[in-house]
Length: 223
Image 1 (cartoon, rainbow, N blue to C red):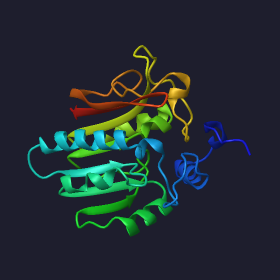
Image 2: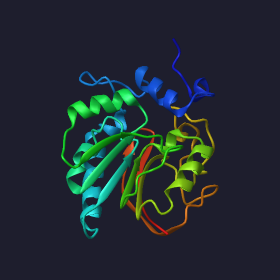
Image 3: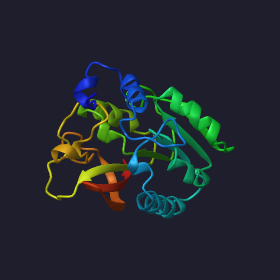
């Protein structure tokens, strides 16, 4: 059977798309987990560097922090950040994945919540984390997400898989699905057209070479 592509999911809801992505193991598999979020969420150098960078950034913010993790996946990464929050709300669209996570990860300040970041209301927080999620969405879905986050948080931390070339054309559209834009030399940059996210300031927290591209994490202070 040929591997499924984004075009095979046209007409499906995002819940159907990503439930099937996990069921068909399109992002790979693990011997210990039914649900597996892919190499980028388990490569040791990438995960360790990302966690260290976020810890440095979050510790520098004053006061207790409510963190909302949108598209938390198998929680291999998020589980290492829970201790940095007064409350950590880990959200995903796949019900079976969340049920598995609830059995494996139990902290007093942790809540798992089924949520579609495109269509559902996003909880208020100090920090929203979106790690390698937007890259799988269409431009229309990303626009909907951006419209929803205004006044929902102070900081938005976004991680995207981008081409190695610095002169790539950002935000070329694609259908929502398991694929991402690096396959056609593009990637999501929220501050570039057509999204033009308005921010007070931004910084790159970390970046790592990953197979055919770069995994880069931006921190945006929202207006």
